[in-house]
Length: 333
Picture 1 (cartoon, rainbow, N blue to C red):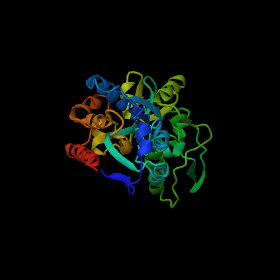
Picture 2 (picture 1 turned 120 degrees about the horizontal axis):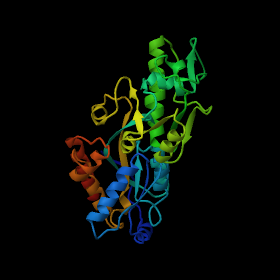
Picture 3 (picture 1 turned 90 degrees about the vertical axis):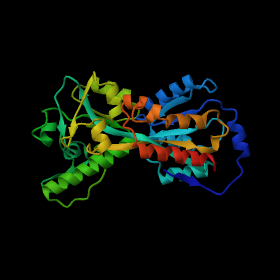
Picture 4 (picture 1 turned 135 degrees about the vertical axis):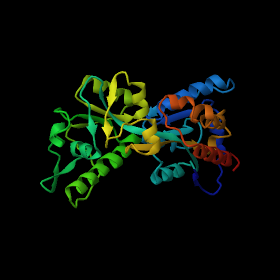
């Protein structure tokens, strides 16, 4: 892990002075990271009487990073949770607003699952099936055309005879980017190889109402799936773990998503999870440094930490030590 961005020293006295008025750690971002961050915030508040419980909000990875990059000082957030790495364009936007010292913390891993109602038909999917069902342009008779399929059995006769309807993360979610890259584009490449086609694979998702964007958090996705029992919902494994009494998940490429298959990389739709710390707030927001250290402690994100019970796939011991050492180094700059 490295500090992603640092410019030559500039005067931030006025901005730091404004930050002093803010006493609670402010966090926003990824819906996937939200349950983890909320648990850590509550445990932090219970453990450290000297510091108020951090405020944690959702809004998606892109939304959280947008808030993070609004500036330094009071009324700006201290941490952005994200289910994808920060983009270079976001680092540039941060710098333009005076956020010149950003630190990346990798907390663990998660998988993206395809969930349906628990008493519905079972889905055994491939990334190719998902691309053929949800990609904007798919091959028909050797040519790319607008996706014509309306039933899963049209995509693959082995799949249920059921209308295709998927509730997928909106473009404000980091999960959406992983879905596009690891499912739509990867699925296109799988189909092209199987059919012996030379086609240009893209990440575009169909926009004819079959794939419905959900801009809110995953509770909305679950509610939509329960209201539409024929639908599939797309979200993180950790959120499924919280709702497994109501939902079932599909296998992908013959692999069931779980802690072991995601940690090993066997499950094909997985990704690391992050949060980003505004280092310019470390010395002025009470407890911010302690919160990061607490998050990286064995009792929280270690192999037997409380977040593992919630579905977080932990870092290796070596990776976790690297995260701690890197953050300690940033504090001494």
